[in-house]
Length: 339
Ligand code: ASP
Image 1 (cartoon, rainbow, N blue to C red):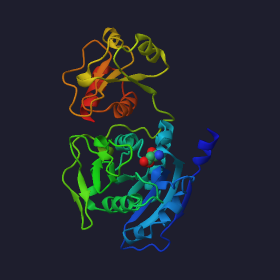
Image 2 (cartoon, protein in one colour; image 1 turned 45 degrees about the horizontal axis):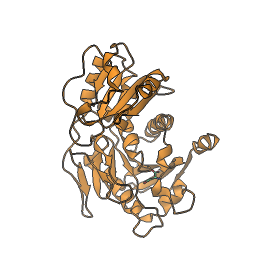
Image 3 (cartoon, rainbow, N blue to C red; image 1 turned 60 degrees about the vertical axis):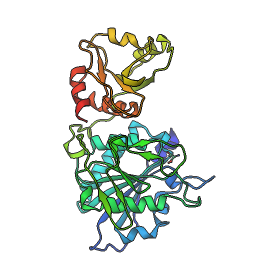
Image 4 (cartoon, rainbow, N blue to C red; image 1 turned 30 degrees about the vertical axis):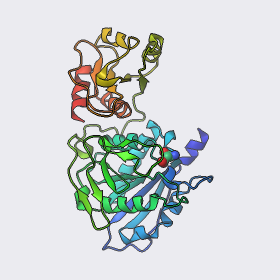
């Protein structure tokens, strides 16, 4: 814990000392992850990470700020919240910022991107970027990904598309991003909705815009909160013991997500949630199957909400935010239908 608090100290410095007014101003916030790693060595400090790629300054005047330096499996809602506040302060301090780039580990890239997509109430683009290979591996992918992230963030078309993730020359919407491989550089897909666009050496190409509400149209103004509601995820499996459900229902959480079988079907151990009153803390059912959505409506008179096509990790984030607005399952269902 002490170590984590230490890492919250913010180191900031201008990397492109000679600001060129022809080039856009970009803030890079670093948070650690493989993109900041060397095999068998501690994670690299933010400035050092960026200075190792001098080509970046061809595209922008760059300011670097290290926010945390962690493997992203150690990300937490507390870090998300304080990073969101820091982003807002940066925008207020620097009205000339064209975009913000966040370097991040790939393990929880989907979660941080979705969280910011719903809570960064600004049209200034946030582009998240990581890598699958460490910086000292042959054919490291971090430098090209970072360069592409800057090209996307400074492209006029990035405005209004929400938080974007750039990896392996693909542009994903935060809501649709899906990590699908443990190791390969093409680990990230974009659900069945497909990528938003791609980054060619010649130009940045967008094919479509995200449909769900995000960023400057989102209702989740949480800048004044000190913490976020606690939501747990319970993974269903064949023969799940009802004691496990009881444990999660009795924990001090404000909501629960069940990662269910296909179509929202659940084991007998989970079935008692359908007998709970609507006044019980909300329980969202999210399918663990990556394709398609859960059909039908949320059952009336119960606390159950349907996640549609949102996977459990993102359903948890949306429920955390929805709980800042309402405890009512019908109202929370409307939120899930919009975002
Ligand atoms: N260890 C890494 C992380 O921080 C994995 C990665 O970045 O690809 O998530």
